[in-house]
Image (cartoon, rainbow, N blue to C red; front, side, top):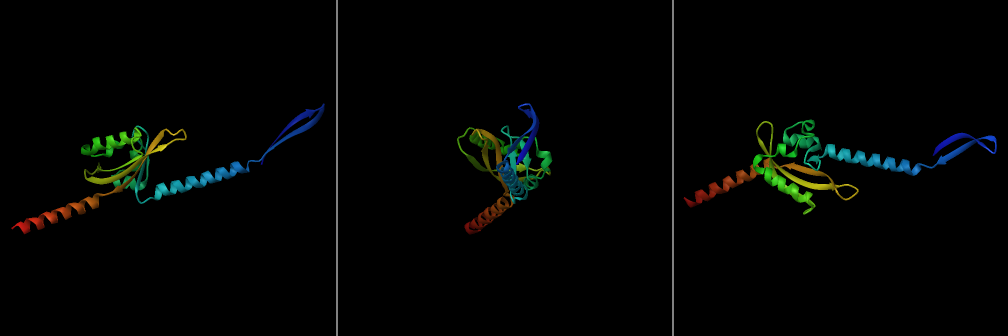
Length: 173
């Protein structure tokens, strides 16, 4: 409870006015919010996949450690930069089209693969699941991307295709 007192007079005599408010529901709500925030922060920071939060203009707001690792960059170096700055030039138009589709409400989320250009010049294949996060008013507030490094999978697929081609070539001989 919150108690407030005020010295006053009542019918010409000194008096004390006391106001008490029960704020236990407020305290429970604050504890629930703090607990929810801690769970979200833990999930964001400890996820085995990369997670990036973007503003509606496509700039990084925050990224988790795994996202930074996948892209080969420091997370703090990404904040404020356009998401397009890590996309391979050949995949840039497709990424822009995918983002425009979800921002225009033509689809609730999108999943697509693209190449990330790492600082060392190597490309990493990324699968992104991107969705719009809406505010209380129902309007888009920001974008959230969950990404997985598909580089090893793409390399294995390339090796398998080469092996099939070699087998076919030998069979034709």
